[in-house]
Length: 488
Image (cartoon, rainbow, N blue to C red):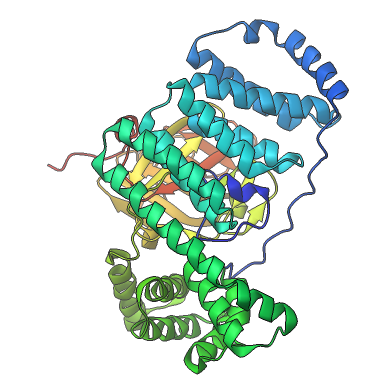
């Protein structure tokens, strides 16, 4: 888990929560939030919005409500001269998505509202999910998954009361879904929450000791272990461990804190965490092994020969480890933008300019989803963490995560290995062999000379793509969108 540093962290269906501190690039400071407009301004803006969209507000069908919510979100994003109108449209978009039963869109609107205005984002996001659940339009399984993810974010923020409230909602939804595995997953998360809450409370004397003496070795050691291994807050935790009283942990933390940049040094640091984990137990052992996996993943792309083979095998071993796998979970967003240049970076400049380093992708991920957000079309392929930054093929479909600039365009997305007919005007995504058509960013557009965008093998206008990964099982609807050809 990662401690949220700004309101966007609450939208954990859309913002990836991982357990590694950013190594390659520093996080950009969040944009300052606006004060909530006064009631008179809100009332005036609400009357105007309802007048402008009178016909849309009269619609009743869930699909129409969801489509209208998307329209309002886009309009709010483009409104810069009236904070009250933006507030009203974001709020209305959230409420419409709730009534339409679209969990993802409702939480996206709630998160955007919280990111833009000075409100309690955790509270508004939880209340939004509770409203969705009360409407009984959205699938219970989707509600349960969302509640579990939001509970993770609440735990990261040390808001254990809110996390408990969300897990209560998750448990009820899981029961309605009739999934024994989901019910078991909620129960396990409740146990984890209880253990984390107790560990956090037990450290109160140590936090007071550090307030009096920031260099207290024993207090630094205990707090550092909690932050690193339990919370996944490595930035703060490593700073404590280097002042701690455990010499082995102190030594490896001193290597980790500055972050090595050479691949061999990253692999060596990963080895140190891996070896150290053998002497730890429970959550601490799992936390050290996760850190090892993160540094192995950072090292792998720049290794060659036997070192690359060794690290690949070690990553595969850790990916299969029962204590490191994510047994459930919703979609974790790695990228959402019309600009492929921000792929695999730490970027947060709004709802449509977001990316995280691939090192933050969860271990044990099984699927990747690419969505064209204008029309909410999406396709899914099977995926592993090791493939995210590579070009590879499986089951007749390929994934190009290298994001190379070739033929005057970035190449990032999913492609069909059977689509090799490349007439003038098409936008190839895959570059292996002769090039392939698909979904995502590709060659320069021959019509206007700009970055190419494609969907379902055809060139499209500039659009925002979202790339997300998932460790848990697919829903029946998602299974229909899984690209997988039958083997002959």
